Image (cartoon, rainbow, N blue to C red; front, side, top):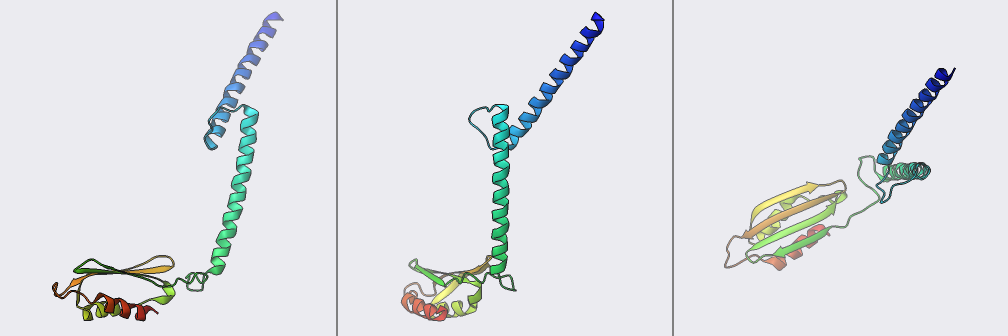
Length: 168
């Protein structure tokens, strides 16, 4: 009978050791899923922190779902953002014999790049590059030009006035 009880006792010790290893492995996995902590936590603290973290993630998820619904409601049938009307912003930088024109506008106020180019050419500029980029809710026009006749230059004030009248 003594031999059986010793064997049972060793068996329980092995089972307990395996259980502790398994729990240590599980706690390491749980700890890896949580935000980094400056100090090591006890098992009850780790479980409490994990519970709080999961609740926080659930709240964030609900908040983001609500924001997504609100954003979809604000969009028009064509997918454009109806809630934000972006006023055109014109920026003209005189670089001596070069002139850079930047216009940022909402998608509801599209302008023909050719209109800008025509005004610049009439003001004595030769176009070096012109581009238009579209983002989610705005269009960005960029035109870089240089004076056709460097001695005469570009009629910057006239160009600025005419471009302003075009976008208003």
